[in-house]
Length: 296
Image (cartoon, rainbow, N blue to C red; front, side, top):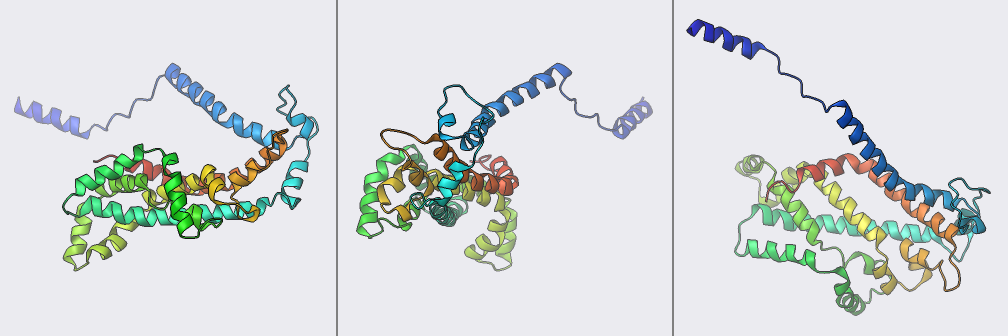
């Protein structure tokens, strides 16, 4: 009996593992059907925006939807890029500078605060972290007046500094990176400490290189938040040459008419840099999101 049991155990150990079962045919068809429907729902507005940007002014307001322009033209782009009244390229440059500057500041401040909350022990750490998380429930519109007074006192009105600095402290960024740092293997930091590295050297040489996916994800989210911000630049930027793209595009509307062809052309110009940024950083974004928030 013992020999038989040993032989059965050997056969069981030598048997190759069974391949994971794939979903049945009907289930796979249902999954792909749902994915196709969701893709159509998300992509259709982008396609409609692109199509409308190549329509004439009359075709853009035609009540009958035309997915293929009857009279395709680039007049909207010519007017957007060639008119002195709509310095779109200047607005685009301002948006790039503002979004990039704020993304860098958010990553720098959030990474330092998150590492301290994840690895260092000090009195009131949990209370401080709880207060930071609690600020996520405060609507951003409540902070408009205090931030405006702060910016006005520093004489930053009508400058890109006004749309960069107030959003540099990100509670979400601290929470996001803190969750990521908690999930990192602490043995690597302990080994660096044994070798004589201090806290900042460990943070700079060990933690940050391991956190590239999370840092790239946070930088992209901060970039998009500033890039899409409309209300705050409208309050603090007054000159036409200082406007960011969302606030500048709003000037194309008036009380009597809306140039949908111009708006869609401007929206396409605003969307292209974001799409390119996501395509370049999507690998880091997927890794960062999948590895964050697993431990608390």
